[in-house]
Image (cartoon, rainbow, N blue to C red):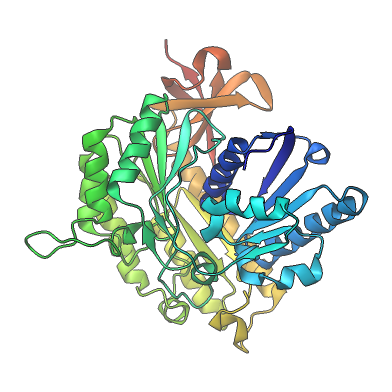
Length: 448
């Protein structure tokens, strides 16, 4: 169905890169239907919240926003109010009991069916779409937020069963896209002038396990490593990144390929979650801190200056002070360039949420502060290594705080600022000499 009269839409996105990619695809579907984007929330005839349930705080923020729009719908019944993403999948029809004004509730697996679902809404139906379903290929061009960097999904869902994580139950089982479809999308992006692509998956190293076919030696011919080689064969996109990796599946063959292939950026995001083996076992992560350290050693053997970032959780049920200090020791020893940290948040339907040994909030808060302090120290040490170096920067946008500066990232994903005109430099790869270093960003001077 194509909307005959002009309508405006607005999407609010919470959470991870996967959600951002999903929102771009849903925006493309809406524009294909005749909707037009607006930055002004109160102008929108359709408001869609693409939600995250990884932490309770994010979920409660969604309900706060939905409540405000529900009041608006009482004044304007023509407003279409939709909630998508992980909260929608987790809560399903229960959301309607809390926010009965909603027109559409849809889980992540239904993103590419948004057009069909809206057709039913426009006929006056209230729709809940959270049942397991095969994810169809994206047949609508996304409305991408950038014309320089782009997300490309390669695998949906997750088969892991970490005891704290709700993702497998809300995003479904692993479903890999075919190499042909992935490569076609990347080739199109190259033709459109994109300089950087980030390959996405909840557990990206698991790519291809569900695709049929093996080599003569019995090895799965559709591994993530094979996909990287294939992308390099068909495309000359300047920069390729990927996220998120799982230590259990991050192989030496993959590390070697990243070293060998020139367009793979020297930046690896490999969550470790805890530096204590007993906690890792309770988390059901499937590796030890020794195994994780060996993995990082292997990355640095091939690429000594690679940037390493990760995720960590403090205050997991039963975590003792000594176990937390084991996490601090791992962070001290490895010296991450950046670390996404969080205090453990019990999530519905996960085993850890039911355990009696929950850590007090004040202890979790104290540990989070101590960890973040150490992360800042190590990041500052790593940043100082850039001083005087010449880095290749992909210019993305103007510095919102200094309109005479532009900003972009190094191959290692360090945010960098320098003087320049965005109209002249947007999308360009330029050489910049680093003159100032902060824990998580750099300043430099462009070389002519």
